[in-house]
Length: 171
Image (cartoon, rainbow, N blue to C red; front, side):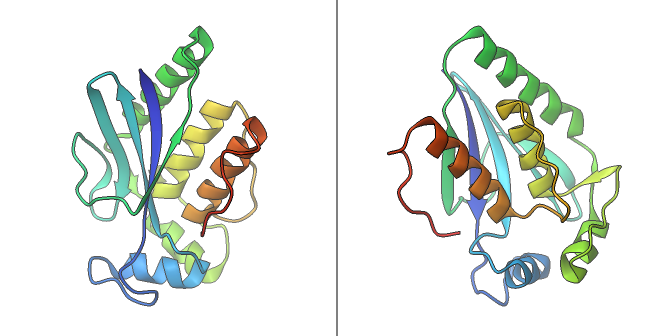
């Protein structure tokens, strides 16, 4: 069975995270419970986790480096269309491995301006591009997309598919 799972992480404290100063700043500025996301692809027993990490860029690994605080599975019908979209997501993610982390985006988050590099990525940007592929709907947003925006987008999608899927989520 093929799955796409979005994992969300939160800082240890709203104003500071000893694991990453950037994580704490992002959470404080965007006023969100979550400050980082990663994408997991599952195809039977094969699973890969993709994320953009400061100093490492976009990485791919098999194990969680840190356990997520929240995970949302995006249901994929086992149809040829769903299989094509799953493969498109995997191809996109594999093509981004090794790209630099987008440090310019941090300045964008801090100043509320859309600043970002075209040759580098940050975690929410990866998640948003995966959702563009899965939902076949590109989200054109005027500001930088934050982890909470990814959650809102997924929850809206799930609500549209089934009114009883999600009742309440803190973001």
